[in-house]
Image 1 (cartoon, helix red, strand yellow):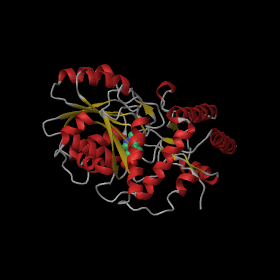
Image 2 (cartoon, protein in one colour; image 1 turned 180 degrees about the vertical axis):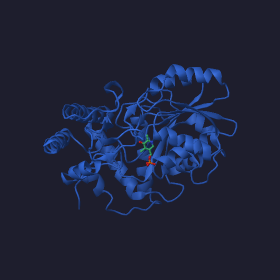
Image 3 (cartoon, helix red, strand yellow; image 1 turned 135 degrees about the vertical axis):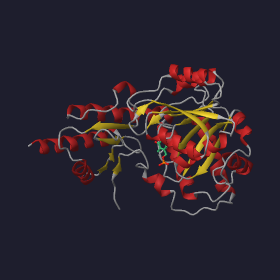
Image 4 (cartoon, helix red, strand yellow; image 1 turned 120 degrees about the vertical axis):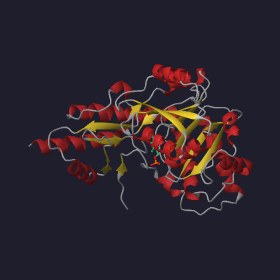
Length: 364
Ligand SMILES: *Cc1c(COP(=O)(O)O)cnc(C)c1O
């Protein structure tokens, strides 16, 4: 068995104890299992700082993208139109989905290293009254930039539109008051900052909006409304649920609470990220995203010198027990290092030391 530390944006390094709860088979029909589902749903509302009377949690099988698509196909009707904000591959994936689903949509695209402007969003919404929904990514995992969703939420709510946020790689790792941010649909998945394993995602949805979506989805399996309706009865999932993954997720939430909640986890991630950015800067690696826009989740670094081989670097890191991630920019040579998961300050220090040694050898 390997014991690599995954410095990736998910799936990521999980604790032994989270992995261990998967060594048992559970029956989907059993009350104990249904209770696990209902408890998770409730705990997620607490993490989102929302009231049970206003919001509900819907769990959905599949990877994060399945859940994004389920929200788009369920929440956006044929008469609606969505403004999609993009500054990376995940925002662009939402555009791809809108095309395939034949949703009326318009795109506000900004360069990957820039935040979208809330003022520009306001102008776009004021100039096109047919827009009913706005969709944006919180932490664009493509680069690691953090988008100003609070400020965008103010604009969206001020004009009474529905706000969809892909908070896949930030929820649980960045404190978020979902109702104050004006979010109607927040999407995240089991294998990111909650530190579970992959297999399902979840939506924290404003009940008032979700209630209007009956019969709107163009998909059976991805119908978020139906999924909610069935789950709401007693916690039984509509189709086969990923039982092992759900058990692991329940354990992961327990460990998040033990750590001190989202605030404490955010602090740990932010410390990891600070160490990484500062030490790598000293070693000649420039970050692609400026410090003030950088998320505490994942960092994109430019190649440090002419002729740098990512392959070679990757294998040297792997040899030392760390798995890093290739870049996702088309016009620039970059790689990424994530710092979420069961990763602590000492791991970061060890990694930076390994990179220091690598650079010392390469410079000779
Ligand atoms: C991980 C991630 C997703 C989902 O990706 P999957 O590969 O489908 O799990 C979507 N959006 C963002 C911002 C992500 O980081």
